[in-house]
Length: 61
Image (tube, rainbow, N blue to C red; front, side, top):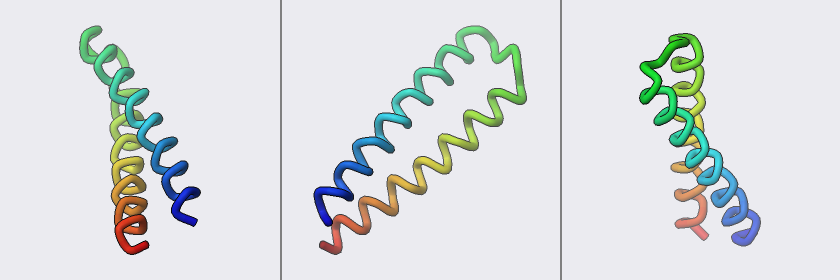
């Protein structure tokens, strides 16, 4: 089970890294599409919550 949680955590962190890069690109372009920015920020927050949950579950193992 711990191996599965670690793999999920790795995937979530990979997605977070990608979203952070996209947000950086958008900020360098002056956020031409505010809806896209809001969507990316929402996805980032959801992934941060998922990451936190996975870390808590791993700590309990």
